[in-house]
Length: 480
Image (cartoon, rainbow, N blue to C red; front, side, top):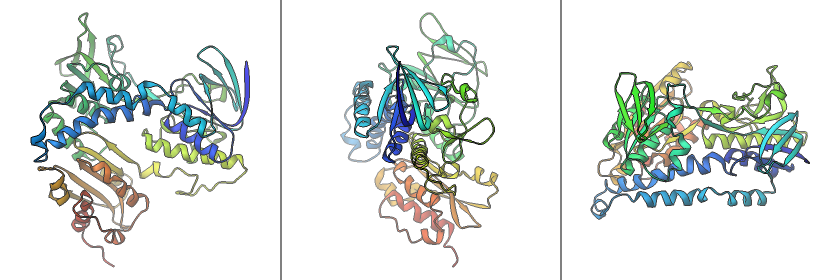
């Protein structure tokens, strides 16, 4: 058995874990990271990077078809095989040599294998070859093990060998027919990508599409998916699933109809990867999300933070988005390093070691066609929180920049104004390329920029950013 001692141990070398370890190492503490699969994790190999790569080619081809001059130059169809090859290149063919080299350059040690807590500040790692290594942390341990797809308890579902998002993003051969269970971000994005490949897609959702966004966002995406040939089954449940001997998946809907598909993707949620970490050794429940304080310390059985144990990313169940996980990871890594040096940290919102944006200023993008980009609160969430608000909408097709972007641009913008403080609580954009203007909205929400000052943020012409001027005009100039 091998043994080693470090200042900080990070369990999980996904994108978030890399950020935790990097910030800790930059803070001057000796750091090791443990990984059971690939350095880079879910985002690099099975989620953000491959999924957006699969979406990009079709989106560009459709965009060109909406612009005169480019439209006439299109002479062929989407080359699906070439898209898959580009996806393979983007994932480095599911090898992590580049990630391992980066860890080395950042002075972060790597131990491969499955980690389990065997005592406070003690992690035992069993390697792929059976080698056992005991790691001891002088200061802290961070759990950054992420999440996995949920398979609901539906009759016949597990036996039908359904896809999860990992199968969809690493697909080697595109099916002729794909059924998708779930109308959230994963379901919508995979439906968009595969419809672009020529696959017939049936999307089944218990409610509307993108139900956590403003209602108009899901409505616009639903219309666009139907234009792509996707069959939507909204406000619909599933009774049972069966894969027959010929490989066909039969999905019985709640209304009695049956859908046949070559593959079924289940995208109805995530569960934490905490069931086999030995958390019970620490008095914490196995298989549950980890609650944290705003410096990302895990809340213990007595309701107070465990001073040496941290969590970030999906497993902390604050925001299941890569960029927010990285934000939490940077907070956690900096906090661990600072406390290891004996510093007392501020707990004030928006201070260096406090993850504040996770509560009310979360930016997110759904790479559908049109894209949905939003930050902060929806109108419904703002009202539920007790704010006195005004909702301002603008049809983005009226922008000069939109007219240049596409011959028949379709888009919608909304801002939620806190009438008492005259600041923005939330912003939503739906349209082509709106992801690229989201950060301006994020800055306005996070910075609580007064509307009177936003009037002086002059947008460049002719760009989609002109939407800011039009939204402010629709609101009316604030009184001095």
